Image (cartoon, rainbow, N blue to C red; front, side, top):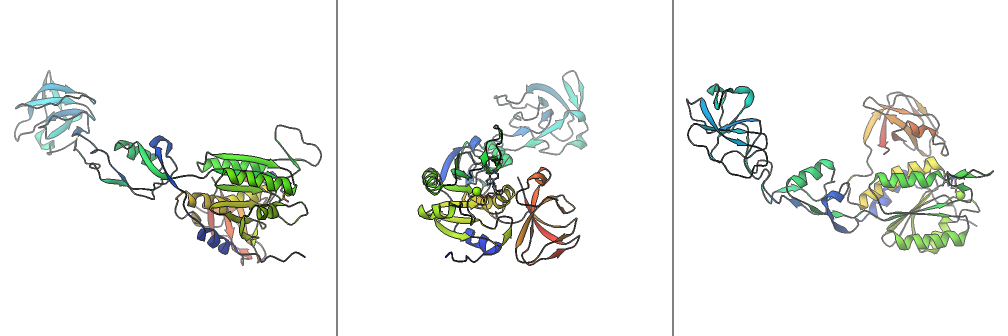
Length: 398
Ligand code: AMP
Ligand code: MG
């Protein structure tokens, strides 16, 4: 006789997952390959930025003296010029943005404010303020200054910041190696014709895409028939090759659903199984030592939703990201919604700055509304009716 498993709530599920999160090891990466990683150590500037006083404008560098508004252009200084210049009395240098200013220059006057006659320039001395248009050494940051702290997610702008300070390698949390096992006798590849009773294997495409969109590059995929020994063997192989295992299908209570038993036979410790939610009730989460296992149900919309709500936040958290389980916003509903109490609903939605619309076609096999969806909306377990304008939590899709 099979024991009835107590279903747990969505919030309990998240607490259990969070309580088991440990970040992966750290590694050094070349800056160019660090996008989407989280810093595991503070980063200090290698150099002063800028490393020399330079011009913020195309114009003329002068050593301004009160009363003197005429100067002789004695030098041309282009960006990248490696010489040092010094201005004698009444001398100016034609200078361009980013070029080093002469060592005794105290202003750069932009060319729009200057009248030129042959090599003589003149201007209204009222327009001069000392130091104008000179970007001084270290005005962004000085050598050894902290420029990005441990825990910061490296985005493109941070790549630029770090490169500007001469940083070419960073210490970051690793991203997991992920295996995906797709179960189901009925599955066919999309480049083959379907025989009667077959369906296309969409979960593999969705999952690999979802993983890649998180910057995960080491992904192995396996497909296996619904046979206990085959499922068991494939799990063993996949666990040996990865930090994180995702399965789809075969985790429900049908006679051909072998995933749970096969995981147990592989000494995977079940952290939770069966959640009071729709879609994705028969989700199983387990661990074998520090390796994670998420066994998702087969229904394709449930796969995407469970990935978004649980797998993605867990993958990001072990990669050093913070607050990964939080909604992106709490927004007013643009349409009303009804359900019975008892299960948390995760529904496909489309949000903008004004609010969020719950889309048509919420069945767990139905992927069609993902062509316009940009989020999952959470409707709480005990909620039955939501009127227009009710506030709901919104979780973005990639
Ligand atoms: P299961 O959880 O194995 O009982 O599968 C639930 C439903 O999802 C069934 O209708 C399956 O045919 C379908 N399904 C399972 N795996 C996939 C897959 N890889 N791609 C698309 N549909 C799937
Ligand atoms: Mg199946």
